[in-house]
Every structure is written in structure tokens, then in C-alpha cells.
Amino acid sequence: MRCPTLAELPMPPSGKAGWPWTEESPQQSGATSDGRRCPRVSIVTPSYNQGRFIEETIRSILLQGYADLEYILIDARSTDESISVVRKYQPWFAYWVSEPDRGQADALRKGFDKARGELLGWINADDLLAPGALRTLAEAYVGHPHFGIYAGTVENFRHTPSEEGREVVKQHNISFVNLLLPTFAEKPRFHQPGIFFTSDIYRKAGKVDPSYQYRMDYDLLIRMLDEGGRVYYLNESLAYFRKHALSKTGRRTYAYFLRAFDETSNVTNRYLDRLSEEDRGRLRLQRVNDLLHGAYYGLMSAQPKETAKCLRLAVILGRSSIYRALLLGILQAVVPRLERLLGTR
Image 1 (tube, one colour):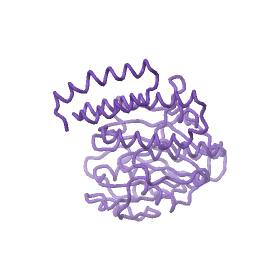
Image 2: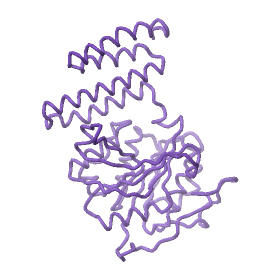
Image 3: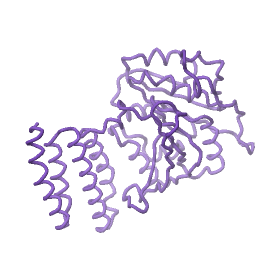
Image 4: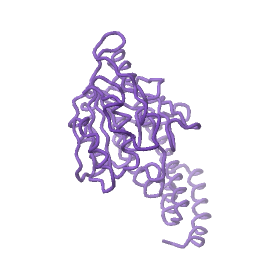
């Protein structure tokens, strides 16, 4: 589908201006700058009760001015105004549905199963594509078709994409080894809204696993890298990531941490037999560090039992006698005071 123009879309709500309300990307031909055919790009938006933001998301994708867009939206039967918004833009969806699902990863898998594009990616219902993102992506793919994975800059914002002080996240050091065993010197940075990939590498890696709630992007990325995918980095911004208290990543509670920790461990455990004993030790200490973060979330959530659980697990994993003694000291000193102050739950 050719992307619609601003004039073809419904009028924006009163008081809305700028991208993507009153601004659009220029309409582009079906060829890249060197005359080669633009690839079809399939974008999937998983949606559930993001009615406050979803229209902005939809418009940012439709107003790309791109020659061959396939836009798919999978809604989990939202109970807010989401569906009434989606219906306004129904003519421009290649496919959309509103039905119960098992969560975001399940919605993504269903959406990508419908996709027929050469390039795939997802934009959540509270995030946006940057102006001209699809043209930038297409140029990178046509010029470097054998990488499989394309990572562009993402800009984090709270209120509007154009606000001052937004955080610019440049992705780097993304490799199978670095994702599995991050070190301080080579710690990778990846940010899902700016990650796109070929349909070939996606299907070769085995698609999105619907059993994951939080780390489906990490799981999929590491499998695509394991299947031979390489990352091509784009210096341009491809997406805007909205930071707000009701997002999944905004609710940094103990429950969030515990599920994310278990999912990360499940991914890395698949590859333990490839690691040396030294690398297994590094991975174990990384998990100890993660558990200390979990103890912090438990503390901030006023959950002393959960805090104690994380610290105890950290002690079990921290096999070094010095490290273990340090953790035991923390455990013995902190937890009883927490229980007295906050009350055992």
C-alpha cells in the first residue's frame, strides 16, 4: 500500500499540531536513491487499552510517505476508546483484529504471521515512528541487504516527540556474545522500537515466542544473531519511545523484575553448554547483580519478604566466599530492619 497523505487521513483532534498531527513525510517514489525497488515494510502494532496514544502511533506510521507499507494492528479486545480510533483509520490497515490473546508477544506473533514484507518491525501502541523512518530503513537495507538486522537511533520522550531534553539512545555493541555475556567495556545497548529485521532471518530464528511477557525482544534478537544475523547501525532516528507510568517498562515493581529475571535466565540457560567455566562464572555474577537490583525494587515496593528472597538467591549464586560473605552481611543487617519497619507481608 502507498502511504496516504495528510489530506487523505481524518482531521486530527482539536489542539493537536506537529508530527504526526499536522505534519507528514514527503511522498516518495517506489525506488531508492540509486533507482532500486523499495522493499515492502510490514509494521505490526500490538494494542491493549492505549486509547490515549494510539491515534498518534497510527498516524506516525501512515504518514511516512512510503511507497510500499503493510500495516497490521492486533488488539487484545481493548475496553477503552482504542477501537473507535482504529475504525477511523480502517481503510489503511492491511489487516487488523480485536480479540483476546495471551499478551504482547502472542499479538506480535499473530501479526507477523500475517506479514508479507521483506522487512519487519513493531511499534507499540504508545510509541511512534520518526518522520521519514521507513525511507531511511529502506535505503539501508537496499545498500546492505545481507545484515538481516537494522538498528537505528531511538529518542525517548515523555510528552511530545519534539520536546527539549529528550534522551537520544544510540544502539551499539549488539552481538550474540555481548547480549549473552555483557561486560562493562562491551555492554550492548539495544532499544526495540529502532530494531527492524528481514522476514528471512525472523522466520529462520523461529519467530516471536508467545510465552514471554517482557523479554520477547531480547529472546528474538539473540536467536536471530545466533542464526547468523548481523546488525547494521543507522545514525538516523527511526522511532520515538514514550516514557509514562502506565507502560510495561514504566512499572518497575518487584513483580516486573521477577518475571523479567526469570525470562532472561530462561534465554541464557539455552546457551550454557557453549560457555567455558569462566564465562559461566561471569554470567552467574551478572545474575547476582540483577538480583541485587530486584532487592532494590522489592525495597522500593515496601515488600521485605521479596527483598529477602532476592538477597538469598544472590547469596546462593554468589559462590565466591568473599562475595558470599558480603551478601550474607547485607542480608542479616537489612532484612530484619525492613521487616520491623514495614511489617512482614
